[in-house]
Length: 222
Image 1 (cartoon, rainbow, N blue to C red):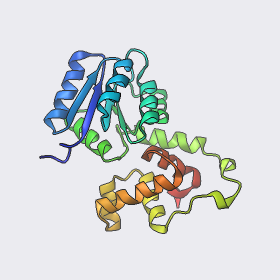
Image 2: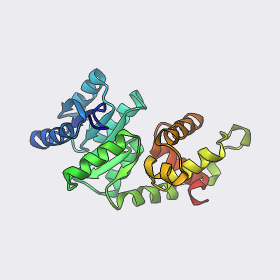
Image 3: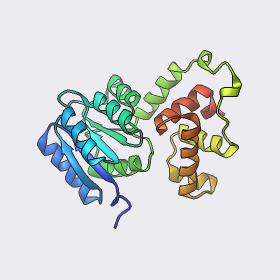
Image 4: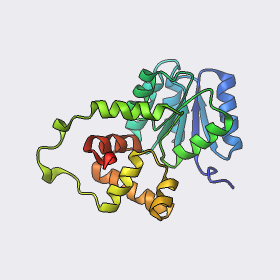
C-alpha cells in the first residue's frame, strides 16, 4: 500500500479524455478517486456526496468556474485541499485561485510524475506551485501587506510558542513538512501538529493563509 492509498480525490475537468487520464494516473499512484465531474455544479454536488480530501480541478469549467468552486468547497469544508491543474499560468488566474483557497497550482504541461508528486504533497497540506508561481504569490502578498491593519490591542494577538513561530517561518519560506522536520530534527507528525496548533490559534484554514499571515507580520524575514 502506498502513502496515498487512503487519500480520497475528486478530479474536475470538462475535457473527458484529460479528466479520465488524470483520474487514471492518480488511481495508479494509489489515490482513491471517489468522483469526477465536468462542470462546477457537478463538482459541488459530487463533493457534497463523496467528501474528497483533495480536489484537482481546472479553472476553465462550465459555471461556476474553478475559482468559484474552490471558494465554495473551502467555505463548506475548510479541511478540503484544492489543487488547480490549468493550462493557464497567468498571474491573475493564479492569484484568484489562491485567494479562493487553493493550496496548489500546476500547469497542464506538468509531467505525470510531477502531477502525482504535487497531489501527494497537497494531500499532506503542503503548498505546491509550478516553478515560478510561488514567488509570484509571495510577491503579491508582500504588496498587499499593510502594517496599519495590525490589531490595535496587542492583547488580542495570538501567542505562538517559539517552536510554532520557527515552524511558521519555514512554512512561509516554502519548505515542505519533511524539509522542516529534517531541518529542525523533528518528526513529520510533530511538524504537522505545530502547524495545526498555529492554524487553530490564528483561526486560519490552510498553509496559504499561514504564509500571508507570516508575511504581514514580518515573520518570514526574521
